[in-house]
Length: 134
Picture 1 (cartoon, helix red, strand yellow):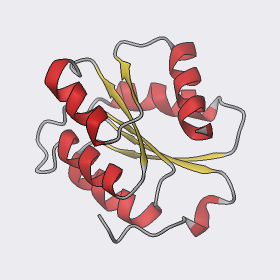
Picture 2 (cartoon, rainbow, N blue to C red):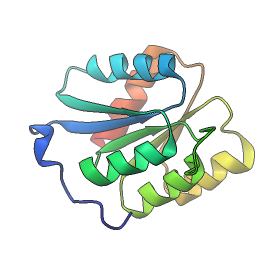
Picture 3 (cartoon, rainbow, N blue to C red):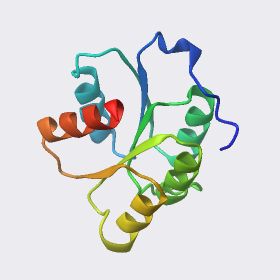
Picture 4 (cartoon, rainbow, N blue to C red):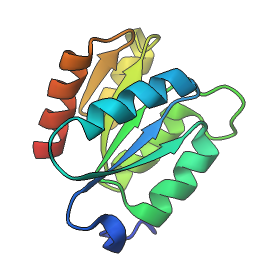
């Protein structure tokens, strides 16, 4: 992931947020939450780790909202978290199963925080705003 470019020229000055979740409903809810922040954001989506890795390399997101349980993908959420954090990309874990050792591993790799599913939209909005501003 060291080949991540420094900036996404197509973002128009706003933040680029990559949402990675295998559940379409969760991606839609997170997209609406990000779009409702009141700041310009370009939102990208991936349903699996392989697609997310490709998008991250092409678009250099400012923040990745990452579900770490990604079935059917050769790139696991934990591996993706590690690669993104090494490339100094901000990562917010979004998972219902991020507990114990998995959560601690992601946080020790550099993930900013964990938004546990199911989540309230206002709590998600506050956490995302904090991650984007930090």
